[in-house]
Image (cartoon, rainbow, N blue to C red; front, side, top):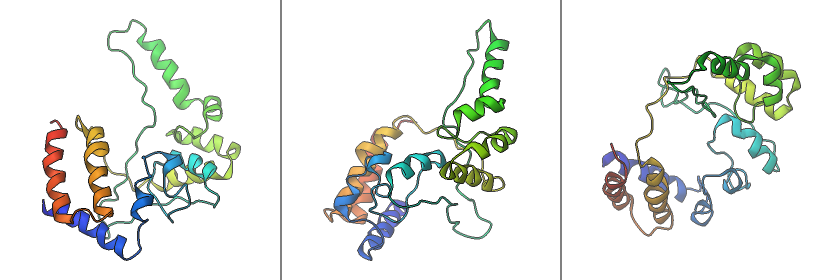
Length: 205
């Protein structure tokens, strides 16, 4: 409860000081590139997955850059981790496991495949492929690769899977409450209480 109240209070104070977009702009963001405040030129910065820089730049009239999240304290956790944009899987009962593994290996480690795929769906994790495709990328795509290279010694462990109901929590609980707070229809303490109550009813496990 205290953490949730502090979180909402932080953003409410920041909004009153002009550090965030206005409430009527915030509510337009539907967690997609084309509705994001940064892409629409309504904010100076935003948070997104690294491979989305290409999509954001296509919409934005201004040159965008990408960098690391600030740390709370020196030596503290970075908040970064390697997250695959696409996940390849092989069925446990398949009779063609070796062929399937070779198929996946082609997409992951083959230089020519890397040149075809580019970075829009994610930067290749193979250093060899990454280095080989770099000269064939446009400046925005190259910035994405350089950013992933920058993360080399900064990433933490892959987090546990999001619990069942997390998507519904974001869409039906967190965002509506945050919007009400932005329009000053509730207080940080009231928003926090609702977040916990409705969150417990939405998230399973």
